[in-house]
Image (cartoon, rainbow, N blue to C red; front, side, top):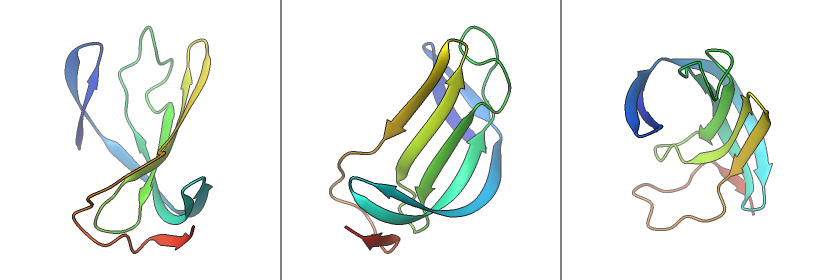
Length: 95
């Protein structure tokens, strides 16, 4: 389960684990876990699992990339910077 904020409210969501993937961003190439959080359907999301999130496959679980289908199209979010991590970033394969 995961807590998230949407429209000034806090929701508790179930998470589907979809496997491991290597993701390339402008920060480099990362080993990631692919997850799909359950979202509240309504004005923004048409179905319960409209989003995919890739988090680093290490103790940090940084959200590297997220893609979501919304009612009027889609949204893509990519991490552009990070600092002061609690744990070593062992999932980065290249810069």
